[in-house]
Amino acid sequence: MKATIHPKYVAAEIRCACGNVIKTRSTKPTILVGICNVCHPFYTGTQKFVDTAGRVDKFQQRMVKTQAAQAAQAASKKKKR
Image (cartoon, rainbow, N blue to C red; front, side, top):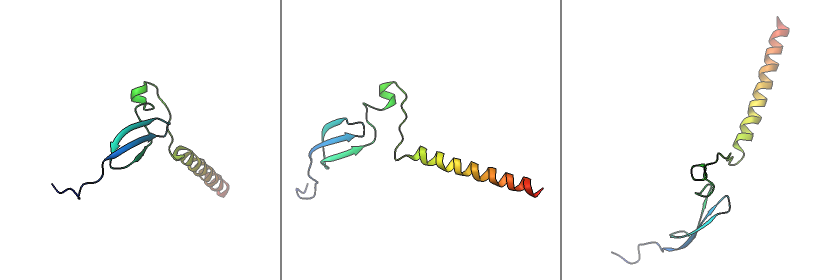
């Protein structure tokens, strides 16, 4: 094997969004993850709502706008009759 083609294998930290830090070795010094064994519902046994980047809120806001538009359209059709 050639000695110069392999990446450096260094001590690394895996950091979870919940604050848990796991020490390991990798080719990257830090690895950021969204969920780990400390906060994952499978391991904790509890159901927990995880919303990354506010996707649920964005969806709910779009749904409210859509419902308002549908109601306005239905009202305008009712006025035409």
